[in-house]
Figure 1: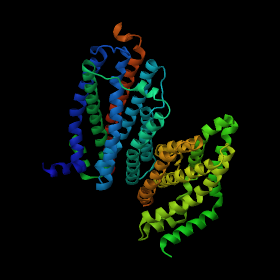
Figure 2 (figure 1 turned 45 degrees about the horizontal axis):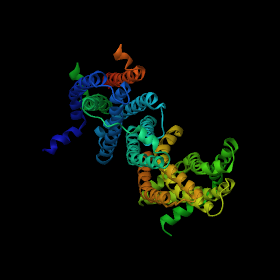
Figure 3 (figure 1 turned 90 degrees about the horizontal axis):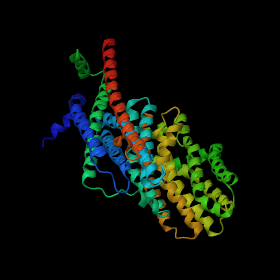
Figure 4 (figure 1 turned 135 degrees about the horizontal axis):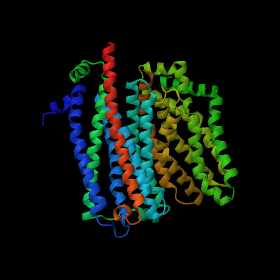
Amino acid sequence: MNLKQIYKYGSPPNYFKLSLKAENWFVIPGILLIIVGCLGGLFIAPPDYQMGDAFRIIYFHVPSAYLSMSAYAYMAGAALVGIVWRSNVAFSVAKSIAPFGASLTFLAIVTGMLWGKPMWGTAWVWDARLTSQFILLLLYLGYILLHLSIREQRKADLAASILALTGVINLPIIHYSVIWWNTLHQASTISKLSSPSITGDMLWPLLVMIFGYGFFFWGVICRIAASEILKREKRSKWAKEYIKELE
Amino acid sequence: MNIYQQLFLRDLKVSIKRWSDLLTGIIMFALVAFIFPLIAGSDQDFMHRIIGPVILLSSLLASLISMQNIFKPDLNNGSLEQLVLSTHSLSGLVFIKILSYWISSSLPLVVVSSLIASAYYVTGIDIAKVMLTVLLATTTLVNINSLAAALTLGVRYPGALMTLILFPLSLPILIFGSKAIEYSILGMDISGPFYFLTGMMLLSFSLGPIATAFAIRISID
Amino acid sequence: MDIFSMGDYGFFVWSSFLISFIVFLINYISAQRMFTSVLNEVKLHDENE
């Protein structure tokens, strides 16, 4: 594989054009997959033996939770690339991921509450997974707030990237600390909340939704990252040429 | 006397001169721990159950209140910039700064925690275990505080940001620290939490100064 | 309607669907609007040069 082909997308104009072209290749399959997943999950999959129709919330809850965590990992990865290679493109991608990642975390928490209330009578439990999602939300918000608070863009990039990296190291530690703390207290809550084993007709809509969420997510990120890069490079020649081409 | 020794002694002298800043942290620590029994009830079992979380929470709040005193005064009088511009390793200099800050701000907390522990009906060797927990936990907290302070050096109103950064990062220390105290009082084996706290201390003192130095460089130029 | 009651859990299931839909819609639309506002910003900057 020719590495030069990849390196050229490190330069802002190339990445900008690639993002805009790629956007609909992600958004449209994403929307289709989500529609198929919703139909499968809400209508085709049979009601669960234990939980009845309420288990269908899993089709919204699990993809959001999974994507919120992997998005944070991508953000930290982009932050690392930005610091090491001083890449504006990488910093733009990292900055773009944060708001959508935070929304996904919010969705995971809310759908989790909507699932917990009818199922186990309580909207919130202090177990490792819920606490980690909440901490993740705080980490995202801290990242966004740091970007907003520091006026100079280069400083904001670097400072927020450090936060993202310390967060990504800390998240597993926090998760396992809470698990450890919980196993000493009650095992019952954990077994109550363990995911039921899931097969066949119930499984495929879940996988479809996970992929659908992922594709749609990256489509939106393409658009936001492109805006961010254009904003940073508004004084450059390629930006001016791009504007002229539009007219 | 090399630069590190000089910086260390200078920082200690300066923090003694600014004793009122130190006192803010100590008073916050003592008062928060003091308020709990007054408003939450003071029977012995209950106090034994809450002393772990109370002590860790008081340390967290005390460190939050005095966070800006780590670097802001030196930024304002120009000495921080001199350190950055010097040819010495900034990570090493920051390590010394954090160490002296820990000595001046957290060692008094260790002493005060012994008083608080006896006020919470803790007896004998358990008081020493409480003091040891505070000693270990504050080392990591001081490093996390320095990182948060360095990241927000350039921000004008860093209040919400500092709390938002501090809270998730310090959560493991709070969890294991209060567990350590709880185990000490129950007479159980405390080695698990203590190994964790020691491990985090070593991790934070080795990586913390590097990250903090990087953050200072970003915020200053 | 069986679809909407979802065996008495209708409120919870459909709320989850609705809020996920709304959040996705908000993110998508704000991305599009951010792009057009940046375009306008660059155009203005261009004209002021």
